[in-house]
Length: 276
Length: 294
Image 1: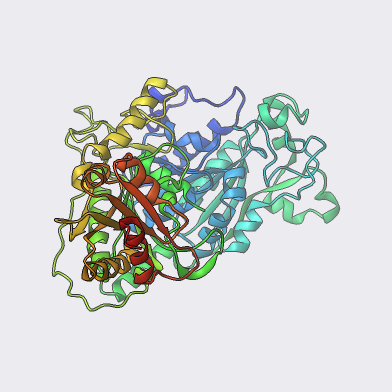
Image 2: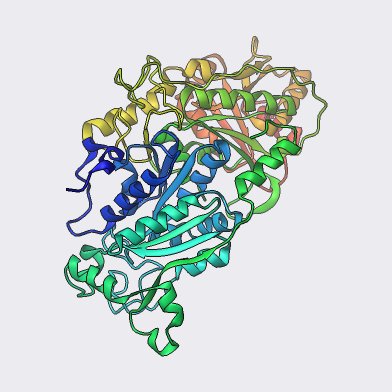
């Protein structure tokens, strides 16, 4: 039997969680603590979990760290504040597709632009789950939502391309099906000094799958298995094969540049304040 | 815009000071002309039934002093505090002497350890919790959802009632200490002018001018806007025959004064909302009106 070493990272008295049976959020939440466990020097005392509002963002309440459940879309500015005030703390942000790319869209691009040393994990379930299935900016074209009964006509964001274009220095994607890969993507994101962004696809059988007749949770995960293509293989695919539901996963972008909190502390030094 | 986070700070009990230098609204209004139209926004400008402290300076030096006081109140009561200024005071240039040091209310810290059963939102004797800082091993959870003393959300009517009550009462029980009113010429006053912020400067001159003409009028300046000076205004209303409330808006604080005065004297509004500041004569005319000297 596998060692359940990750259990100490959870507030046992807060479980079971409120997510629906078959939801993928728990898989990503566990992947996050497995990645943190692998990081030497990262402890439950010096790592802060910040989340926004929505299904994904309830994760913070289950995780046994100092945790901050913020306002809708605002997790990144709260996290930026923590990192600037206490640069020695490790700050991880949990958000969702609605939280991060709609009401929080501006915070997201400016967090990327500034290269704040945060690791942002976006649980992408393609829908507003908690409020009953409204279309988010990451609901695929043509998919149904309570606010798009004939299929969404709004072209969705590719959050990874958005993060890269906005200046994030680590951008990756994985899925709730590819658990080991997901842990690795998060772990590498934690390693990156700067704004790290990991999109994790999760299945929402209740608000998204059911309405779009994609079927039960296992079928939604099989869809991830069948359509996700590792970045290296994706790059070799001719364009006529990059069609249908196929999408790339893996590390998309990595760069090294000064982080915002380093730059900010230089300003503090120049202004005669206390050094880092 | 963004006022949801004032409510977040009230609910999660995070110390924060917000400076609002008021200008003419609504919307883009008349930038950046003077107004005092955000009084009720300062009180209620986030959704929900929250508590708040609002302070309003009338000079450069007092802007400094009240900013310090605002930070200290925010820390002591773990609440948002609004420093409600206006364009008049905001653009004021005065020579000031600033103190070498200021009094600082220290950050509240846990009195017991996790092992001893620490709960971040358990109220102390003053009804304010000693919320731990992040990164000190307490593993606290902070949320804008209504929560119990552990900090975790609960969907309970009892907890919700107790939470909202404590949030209000922690300010109410200290209200006499927080409420600051600046009074002058009140010992023999038959009438009074109530004003705040930049308008109080004009009101002061109007009172001086009326006094020169023999009108027994006093000056009452609200330094603390909220919690409102209910008791002080009630006493004032018993003492004088009439109150003039001067404010640069269509009438906001006047409703609070009327409520507190509870019909014990006349309360007349002297309102201005044309993007210009009061002239002393305008407030003097209102004094004459209320005192029957017109």
